[in-house]
Length: 96
Image 1 (cartoon, rainbow, N blue to C red):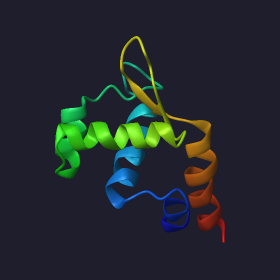
Image 2 (spheres, one colour; image 1 turned 135 degrees about the vertical axis):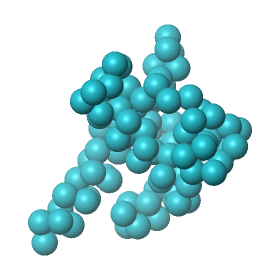
Image 3 (cartoon, rainbow, N blue to C red; image 1 turned 90 degrees about the vertical axis):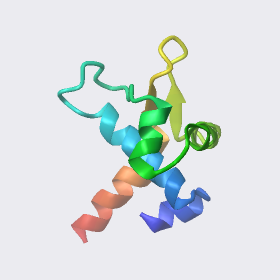
């Protein structure tokens, strides 16, 4: 995933947080399907990051249009831009 990661100027940590949000929001067994409801602390623990680091990463990803935040619940999900640029990149790469 380095091509889109580099194009969007994402660090490895930025990418990992966004990818986790994508996968957690698409878990078919989730009680809130379509949204990642993991706390910022829990996301940080996944990757050895502080809560504040995750908050900073989320703001960066949001500013780049890669994730959105539900204003009522504070849940997260990736955007169509994430899907088009990162998920489809992986699918195209696998088909080669």
